[in-house]
Length: 631
Ligand code: MSP
Image 1 (tube, rainbow, N blue to C red):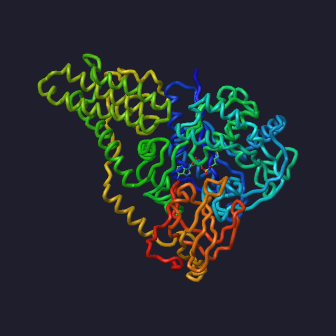
Image 2: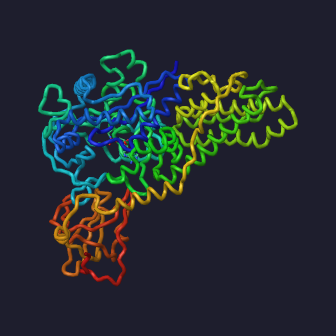
């Protein structure tokens, strides 16, 4: 029997689950359910990442121990997965004893390989991202290049993993496995990153204690990512359930967000190579969701709290929307307007209405009994066959949205079939045999649709089967049942309540807009006008600009502030070249304490708007003189 092992990232417990987490987990669930349907022996893993400084800090700020915080938060994740019908086979917590033991064992295996050594770590650490950065990688002002929050300087003894040793082996592996990372563009990013040169990475810390102790040196705890990645082995049974481990390892699919691709496509395979274990088949990096056009912030979270969305729209509608709305791999925007629109058009109109009108006809013309068809399904049968085949192709490359799009060709095809066959005319003309065939085909089309939609909307799929009078459970059905003709004549349909009630889109939009407007105002910590007045913002004109060698981001500027000429280092190099900057007027934080970036002194900081991967300098006209105050 073929096997399939799929994972989600394990979620940090310092935060409540949000729509981004729900997205990854729903996608993995869809993949798992589809493979089960196709007869694969499937193992689906999710869980929580409970160690590390971030969790320790969050716990302390709430007056709890990290374990107490983890115990409290893990329930939030588990509750949400239950409500979303996540069919995971195991939920791993990195504080589970089997996990801690496995991580220590693997640490020793890798150490014995000669790939771990004790050195001294000096660098900058971003706690929210649990990531180390070198001087050159940071943004000006010692900000993390990923989340742009301040990093902390650290110098401490540390164990290192010889990542540099695996550079060539990794490049060879990517070349031999061009579909190891999907979407393809993301593999290119990884290849360029590795080609730029890999440095050994620090894998232990001594400045806090919330983690798994390094075997034989308990002053150190193991770096949270080294700990976390091994969940994919430990939860499967590495060291404690060899038969399950042998059955399922290597993983067939790690679904992750694009922000954590480097850990999964560079560090993870290197750790596995070192441990002498086979590498996963595929890492799929999906995109990020914004909310109502904005980056998800704490205040926007309640607008898209997954529990609220389930209450308002239902779990299956939410699952459908997440999988249908954006191409898997690209970024997307969540809005209530788009959600309500999808539900009305795809679910209420196309699918729900189809079921309703089909059952109405079965009741009217055959007293609710599935009729015996006079001949095979013809064009509708052919369409269903093609759709089944195409969906398989899309699902095998995680093109979930395309699979749904194709499935809707069948839904629309059945609707069209009703319109062209016009059963009401056949009934009027008393062409009973043809009428039986048509009604049978419509109901059979719905049966197949429900089965194909079941990985995405398991509850609604079951409701369709129930209304069609099918006794069996959709969950547990097999691929063979996708074959045309499975609906048994003679069973009685049971028309129930509408599958998806229509929503009042206008009212929803109005309500959410009001909510967003009410939320406006200070979101972050408030400051006084006096505090703000401490920041001296002036217009400065760029006189000279040159790139700092060895850095993609940093550009050295000479600026005229109206009062003096000074050197400033700006982290804008990925969006602006020196030639774009000379002559330009920028806004400068003039009284910022001088700092050195990659050894180059910076006296002040220029302001830019940043969002996602984008950045823009504010535009100021030529009439604005250097030295003009911004306030
Ligand atoms: N603990 C690590 C993963 C370790 S895996 C061995 C972690 N956790 S996380 O809780 O911060 O993020 C988990 C997942 O949620 C990531 O895949 C991330 O991409 C995803 N998302 C977080 N915010 C998101 C959006 N706004 N949109 C889509 N997914 C996002 O990283």
